Amino acid sequence: MSVIPNDFQDLFEKRTFAHLSTLLPDGSPHSTPVWIDYDAEVDRVRINTERGRQKERNVRDDPRVAISMTDPENPYRMLMIRGEVDEITTEGAREHLDQLSKRYTDENEYPNPIQTERILLLIRPDHVSRFEP
Image (cartoon, rainbow, N blue to C red; front, side, top):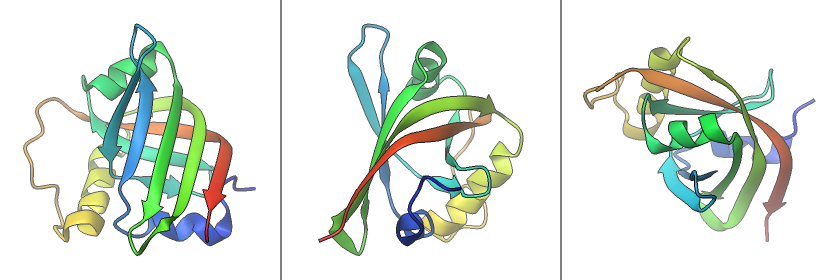
């Protein structure tokens, strides 16, 4: 069963920007806007990033994360997720990035140069809060 409520899964089909918060080595928070996706079949939030970015380094040291997102059509409708990155993989990462690029930019392929390699952060949602006025 999916932890993400069915009536909020549409946020993962729109151009919804999320904010991913991770923990720096000194314990202070690091937050960054990200494109986001959700695989309901395996109940994992997916974030695509490039190897070596701060968020990847942070979750390798401490997998705990928090995510917040607001509906681009109604900023008072929001979803907050706390969980852990339980897998980091390169498998399918490039194809996934192109899928996100199509949704977020209408480009069939990600238009920016890739410096290293793309990776997927698979996040197990342990606690989900939602608000809809």
